[in-house]
Amino acid sequence: MLRTLLVSLLALPLLTACPSREEVLKAAEDKAKLEVEKKAVMAKGMGEALSESGKVGAESLGQGVGDVLKGAMRGVDASLQAVKVTPVAALAEQGVRVERASRGADKAEGAKVISVYLVADKKFAGTLELRALDKTGKEVGRGSMAISAEAQSAQYVDFAFDVRTPLDLVDQFELRLKG
Image (cartoon, rainbow, N blue to C red; front, side, top):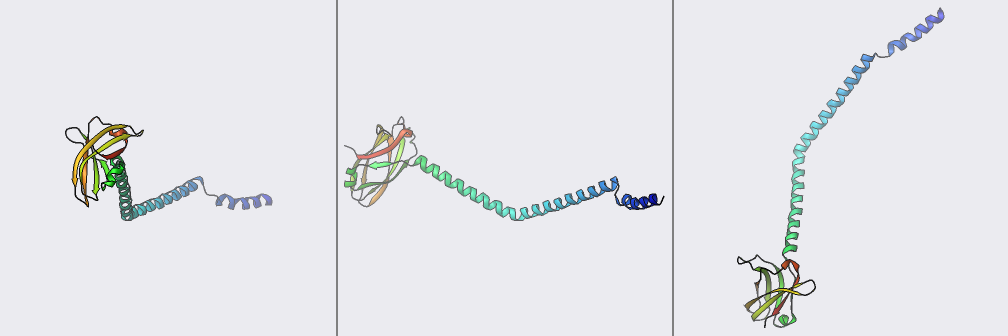
């Protein structure tokens, strides 16, 4: 009997120290609510920070993307419009050189245009011929233009090509004196 009493006395604190199932569930619920409230407060804080600082960051990011796109578009335009023009040696002797050339706006009558920026170191008058060559060196078209230039002058000269000239196949142009 003493033994039973002793076991009962020792077991009583163990039984009363264990929370009931309902108490365990309530504690878990309270802990979960606290975690959700902490996350909600964090989200609110992040939202406010983004509202203030995010505008500056997004603006900077947008400007950077815009600059990249502008640069890419300039590169695409330049690669699609620029053409290679090689003047023959006789032009250098006449004091005429090519600084740049590009695909110009096609004329209303259908002619395709190559614009060449010429510099005349000496006075020059004559007819120039621009020949379009494919990658094998075969001629696929030509255009000519009479020009007159004073010494130390420069000008754009537009060479018109037949509408049927396949300029997309042209690898380079050769500028020469006609005649």
